[in-house]
Length: 267
Image (cartoon, rainbow, N blue to C red):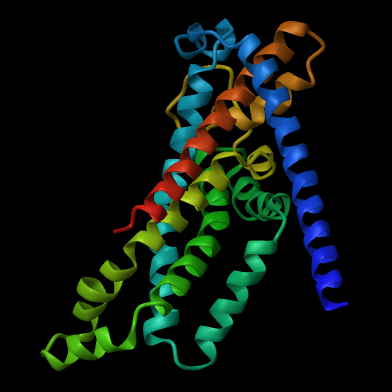
């Protein structure tokens, strides 16, 4: 009887996995077929106003890079505090808030930044978009840093202190170095998450058809432009949306593959 139950559960597990893989494959195949049919290298040479995607790709990379500059140090600092210094209720509060923020809908974060930054400053901006993405990135980095540091053996910390090193030197030179592969993987996955976000940017940075480096105004965004182009009646605009979706998906896949590669080759 127990053997039969095990076989039933195994069959159900395999069936469920196949359903998930089938839908994922369906999405990717459709995206690659439609995206490749609309893809051409002139997309990287012209801005959206001239039928290209150059300004949108550069703008998206700038927004996510600025968000990473804000989110990675804050997230790592909070994760280090929780694991290495936090012994009381404050560490638990930070950990609980981080878990809550990880599950918060991205559109809610966009609405929050819209209320506290966009309205007081009088309009959308690249800075507001970067802050919204950074808020989404911080809890992922906190949880990753906290989890990876917890896996470092306590004996390494004690050995460093026994040799006369201060606590912060032990953390920087021993603990973080031992956990750097896992932390880097988590950062890459967090970057991959925010680079494909649309909802928070709809409220905060919107998009622009022209190339711009002015972060105080509406800023070019690949994800928001995909949403706008997909709703246009012209067939050429929808083809451009498919090409942009193909490029964005390829970027996310490459980042995730890089994270997996780092994890598997950590030695």
